[in-house]
Amino acid sequence: MAEIRCPMTGVIARIMVEIGDTVTIGDTVAVMESMKMEILIQADTGGRIKSIHASVDETVEEGDLLFECE
Amino acid sequence: MTREMVQKISELRDRVARAERGGSEKAREKHLSQGKLMVRDRLARLFDSGIVVEDGRLAGIERNLPGDAVVTCIGQVNGRDVAVIANDMTVKAGTWGYQSFEKIIQIQELAARTGIPLVYLVDSAGARIDDQFDCYLGKHAWGNVFYNQVQFSGVVPQVCAMFGPSPAGSAYVPALCDLIIMVDKAASAYLGSPRLVEMATGEKVDAENMGGARMHCTISGLGDMLVESEEQAIDAIRNYLSYLPGSWSEKPMDSEAAPPTEIRTPEEIIPIHQNTSYDVHDLINSLIDGGSWFEIKELYAPELTTGFARLGGKAVGILANNPAHKGGILFSDSSDKGARFIWLCNAFNVPLLFLQDISGYMIGSGVEKSGIIRHGAKLLFAVCEAKVARIAVMVRKGYGGGYLAMSGGPTKPDAVLALPVAMPALMGPEAAVNAMHYNEIASLEGEERKAYIIQKRDHYAKDINPYGAVDRFFFDDIVEPNKLRDDLIARFTIYSRRRYPRIERRNGVFPV
Picture 1 (cartoon, rainbow over the protein chains, first blue to last red):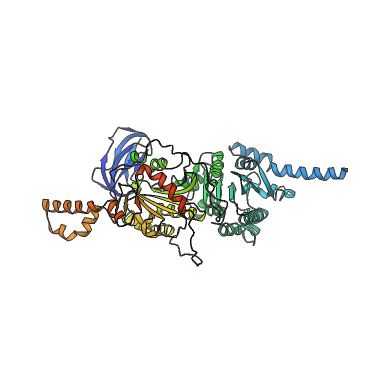
Picture 2 (cartoon, chains in turn yellow, orange):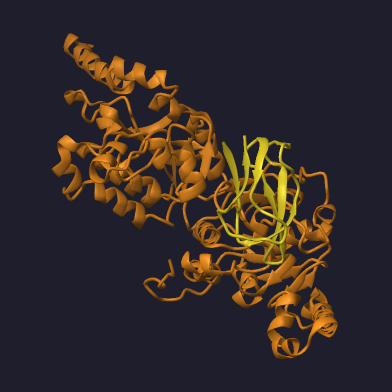
């Protein structure tokens, strides 16, 4: 089971994948906003999205679990 | 020649052959079976044409410890002399004994006195425990190697490649070098071995997870460069040294200038919208001589990109906020990374280029607990202390303390340039309007409040452009992105001739 975690504190602006989507390393899975910047959250692992643990406009912290892949 | 002379020559040759062969056949086979190079093969790859001078080749030979498990020698790299200290893992697991230290100390001092770089090729099980008192307490022991590394830090370049372990105290040999290259899945550094850790604390962990190359190059920050093979590590040392002079009092060598290899121009690369992410490597590659990028700590705190390059054939150190990672904002680790890189460049006469695209230091309770203020102060300290030629370019955003830490105008760089899309400000429009008009905003409601905020924000945003700043001579010039390369080359050529008055003191009191 692979996990995609949040790189820094901020607010989720967009979620780019749905459960069941296949992602490869480097794919943008979500976009967050922090410090006036759009931060791309990219998959550091490949696989099929099994679960999504964040929603748009939610505040997230560094290290929070956002996606699980299998 | 008499028979006796023939006999004497043969005795010597026999010893030299044994010394150069290294450890026992079994140890050599084991070493090679791990895909590792023999110590003298590493040296052959490092040098232009072999060892020129070697001392202590026959140390330990009468005790069956060829070289006392270390080769210390001088050879040429890129046509210049370089001193090397190389462990021989096949002799008593590369452990450091008393003569190892004496050999190392002697060549360190020779390198410093002749002004040539020191290269450490590390592959060792650590100090020789059966010689522990000599090694540990002796006045010419282990600690002397560290002492010399510190004395000569900033005097001559010291670079280390790790091919295997460097446990316990010997982990400080790489730690006290300027640059550490680690071979993935082979190099490791830790203070206590997995066995010792389990005995002392009960924690069960393997060497790779505790102190492996990848961990150190991504998380701890001890490693500067992760490579896949010993050959890559040695080639990286040769490449690294090509950006540096032999010692602090000289200048780096010039190379032939080459045009950038990036096919897109800076104007095509830089997104006009301030909050859009892009990879600053593309911008760097559109400015520098093609093929000249040598990145340091690529995998660690990547929101700040640091590395050597050449501009018109001349070496330059680049620090660039990278919006592709964490928005290019400065954190504690990226501040450390930047400070250390500035110290390295400043020590060895490498001019500094800052590419600013920063909305500030990260804020919030998490970073305060991580010590963002004292780590941030370290970067500011290093910037203000740098004496080499220094140019700052505001690419897009340059807000607040982040602007200063990235060599902003008040830190006295030789020049501050801005691109036409630059936005200099103490903070962004949203935050500024909220700070300045908090009470008015609080007294309004609904649509009225929204309209008020938009009006104030637009008013504030109108002032955030580079022309107000250049009008008051805060910026030295506003440069078209596609003309930036030529402008930087011309400016660095002039600024690099500048001299500095010395300030008398023993040391500044560095924030760490």
